Image 1 (spheres, rainbow, N blue to C red):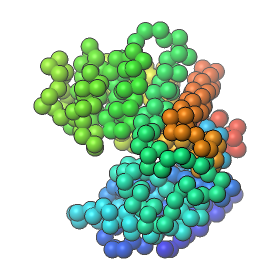
Image 2 (cartoon, rainbow, N blue to C red; image 1 turned 90 degrees about the horizontal axis):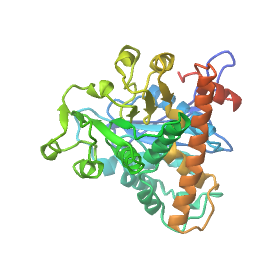
Image 3 (cartoon, rainbow, N blue to C red; image 1 turned 90 degrees about the vertical axis):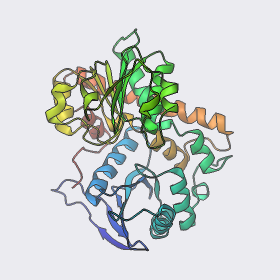
Length: 385
């Protein structure tokens, strides 16, 4: 394992504390771990596996994780890992994850927790942890669990989407909204499906969802439970059994101009760019994924009167729940239902409060409310290199 330490120069934007290339065996995949900062020796973030992931991308994501954790008050720094399988080579997933676990073992045991992210699953994480000989339940100071780590996260698989839905509901309350709102969701994976379920349970109408094949729209409201049953694990919806009233748009970006009150972005980064801002019809835009809007797009949306709930405020449920356990903030020895309820209440309170602060700052004229919140916590929003 080769490591490069890059301490920040005083006059330069902050750089990652640690950027390391992992030596993978066999050598048909590349992997990196980037640690933005540690707090009391602890940092955390997800492991993504895509053919396009880069060390630079991971640096941005690790910085965003630092901001997310700081905003909810967790004493943990941000990190991110990435695995890039060789293009054109079939991925032998168990072998790749075992190789990753063996290579990352010194970091895991040293306080750098690496969970799931885009392209990896709970089963992948378990394979990597087993190869590393790592068990989070044995980490000193962590919450003592009454169930296995896998059982906890199977029970809480919706937690990130739950947090995004909490942010939407809080924003609607703050705006004085009393009527059901029309929701459009870009991305119908784990997060998008959870958002749809929680918002529909609160009486709102999901009028459009988008996957890699296009956008499905019904202004009368899509049947969320039935639609989810037609969705594969990768978030692709079976078009052969859609409701008769559903309209299918094949345009890649039809979700941008669907007639909706709230647009939830729960898929790719940079989904809304500066040149597509004018197409957004929803009054509220919610970054349910990582870096869903470019920075110029986020600014232009606000300037044109849209409410924007940024990713570092709303896309934090999974990270916050994990962080509460890692840092020992969650009570120990609770049965699973009570632990789940405690984590959801803790996350809900912090996301709701941060959304309120963002809206208050925006209403008072701030064009960079998140930057102001981070400055108050001794951080700043300079992008990673």
